[in-house]
Image (cartoon, rainbow, N blue to C red):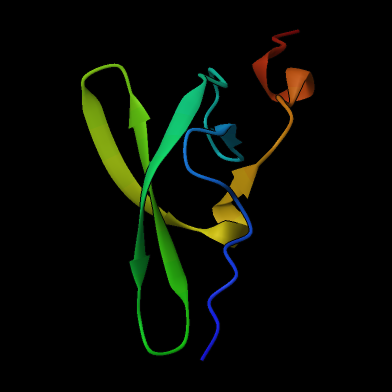
Length: 66
């Protein structure tokens, strides 16, 4: 089996649901039977996410308040 992650280690990404759109760094992959989890670091905290939760570009619309 060949594992091809969608995001690279040390790549800056954003969480689609993060209202502040903070930069996060891909620090680790967790390979499961049917998917890959990405460990993302933001400051001193780390969290694991699926690829569909992650975006390459910041969503400025989510940070706007009217």
